[in-house]
Image (tube, rainbow, N blue to C red):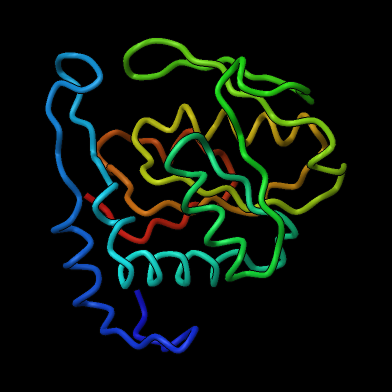
Length: 185
């Protein structure tokens, strides 16, 4: 993270990165035995850390017209990133949550399968979209989101995450879409 003052907030990048890492809580055996869940809720509750993360991710959106947030913590990050970047936000939801669906994509998780849906009338063909989520693990959710947006005719210009779990190889599932991870573990 850079030490650039934005939105009237100044921070030391190294201090914020260390603080963010200290705030992330490892939760063993959630949601299933053998899975180590990285809970970023305490990071989101820390105003300075949350502002720094949103600002850094917004700086990576480039020419994006929309930010797509992956359910559920990705919604929170994406909304903040979109506000800082001055663009719209689109929630990519779990199946059955939307009244009108433009498309859906089923994918493999490290512990089962899931389906994501894109709300109707939110992504125009040719729209440049930056995808945001909290953690990139095996990459299944991010890859499904990229595919879902591509099916809608969007140009996915990048993926931004707070934390990449490098050992799980998720980056490899994103194809040519650039990945921007603020932190790696």
